[in-house]
Length: 117
Image 1: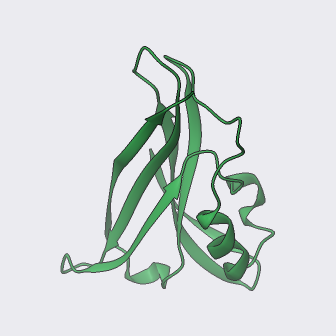
Image 2 (image 1 turned 180 degrees about the vertical axis):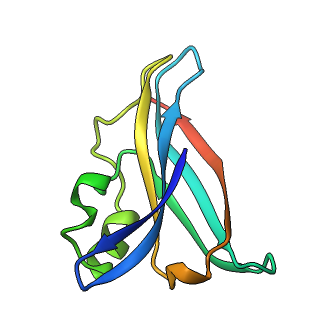
């Protein structure tokens, strides 16, 4: 997992948690949900986001899209055939749209993972 500040279209910065979701199960999984939260210097939560691994947002496109696009893309589910085979991984990215300057720490966790059928 790697935190970073990234510029987006509209001349503003967002805070991003990016990483790899690794499937340590003996079966393929899909619908892996990851939640992240960011906090200010006093430890107060600023923003919370949950995403599904395999949605269409990525670090490659983030600089070219708007906050509205990010909000929409983060809510999308992955393609129907998306799955993570055993011992494989898939990239994820969680974007926080609140003012990045206030963020001092973050937390993330896997909320759920469904077996592929």
